Each structure stands twice: as C-alpha cells, then as structure tokens.
Length: 221
Image 1 (cartoon, rainbow, N blue to C red):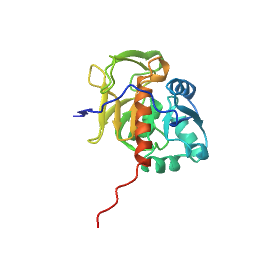
Image 2: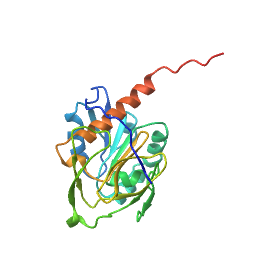
Image 3: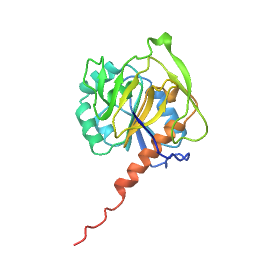
Image 4: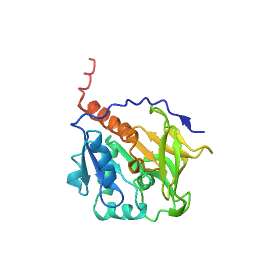
C-alpha cells in the first residue's frame, strides 16, 4: 500500500538564479517554458549535453514516450542524464516524462531512464479521444484541488517503499508521486493556468541547489 506524502510545499516562486531546463527533443516543452518563466525561473530549452550540464533541474515533458526515448539515445543524452540524476539533479517527468523516469514500464520499445522506483503503464486510459480532466488534491500543495488534464495518460501501477504518493484518482489510481529529487505526474499541469505543480518543482530545484552549495560539516578528530 503506497504511503501518503508528508512533503510540505511553499507557495513562493523559486529565486531568479535557479536555471531549469526543459528537454526540447519532442512534445509540449514550450508550454512548460511559459509556466516556469511565469514563476520567475530562468527556463531554457535543452537539446545537447552542454546545455544539460548548465541547468539546476530538468523537466521531461509530455509527448510520445517511445520517440523521446529514441531521441535521448540518438542525441547521446541517455547515459549522461542517468549519471546526473544519480548525482542529485532534480527531474520532473510529466506524462511521457513520467514513463521515462520509471524503473518498470509496460509496452515501451526503448529503454527508459529507469531511475525512479515506480511501475508505469502506458496509455492506461485509452486513446486521445478518451482524454479527460479531474480535480485533484495534491498532497502538500495549498489552495484547493488542482485541475489535471489527462491525455493518453499513463498511470503509476506501483510505488516503491521510498516513493511518496502525492495524488490519486477517486478509485485509488496513483497519478503523481515523488522520490527524493524525482517527481512524476501522469497529467499535464502545463496545459492549465494553475502553476502550483511548477512551483513545487522549482522549490525542489532551489532546495537541491542550496544543499549542494552549503559547506559540509568538518569531521571530528
């Protein structure tokens, strides 16, 4: 049984010196850029390894998961991105991005990043004509329910013991989860004017940047 999240989220935007990349190989990356910039972040497109190395956090947008997976390999980004995530880079995957973060995925013909302890089922709600919206309570986000847009969306079938479940549908289906500095949502927050999910991720990025800049305590002799 997934455990409920106890993550507290502030509503203030990230500082202006936080740079967030949006993977811009395919999908709705432009909408994420608009949302992040509206909150004051330095948001940039990422297509190369040099660009990837300049960001404090990364959004992997919705789109076609098999296409993005192939392009990560073609652009020689798959292994470097895995290494950066292992080193603490915050990453948020929406829809197709959530699929790519998962360690276990059904019906994906290319290897995902496989960095987050979740099991994801692709296209779990059917085709594009089966798209829908739902009001979701996101654990730790204030201000009432968030309108979530689901388009050919995946679902999180299983969350590992170290994963915090942030939101579920009325039937208990998990649609948002967090594991450390990794965030996965089945829906598309970038397609609405509600910026609270982007605010959550910016806070994660700002906290990670502050933690990496903080001096480590000296060991006792």
